Length: 179
Ligand code: 5GP
Image 1: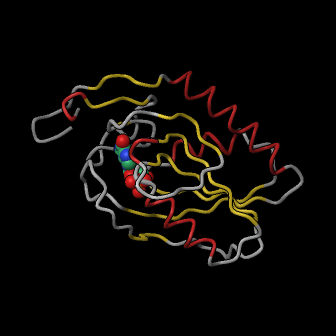
Image 2: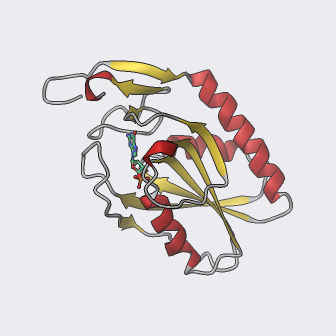
């Protein structure tokens, strides 16, 4: 959606591909945290759909927390600046934290979050992202669980937006006219 109306989308990852990947990631994370008390952190807004699907695949005792970050001001390229728009509501000191991101592009957001959360002394910090653009990375980024490695194209759907739209698509698509 832009001032000209809906944009042309090319489907990239189908619903069932995403579902299978989320199940596999859920199984691996369940194994990792068996018998541990987990705090699952959702990075708003883009991760909300992945987060809600992933935590339902975790056969663990866990609690949920949300934080809001923004690095893109309605643009398709990262501004390189990360702002906290919503901080966690409870302490993470001595908790096992699972940080759940939708997509890692330059890595700046994940890097910022990792440093920010580590300063609060969690018992452990594990990161999971559904999508990774390995060729876009600009900073070193420690990722524990990665769903799909994708090319350097802008994607929407399954929580990811373009100018606030397309988050509700159940699949992931590339925007043709931006490529
Ligand atoms: P990074 O800091 O790694 O460059 O960017 C991370 C954030 O940028 C993501 O959480 C997401 O909000 C946004 N982002 C990066 N690539 C894309 C993309 O292809 N599509 C959308 N919709 N957002 C993206």
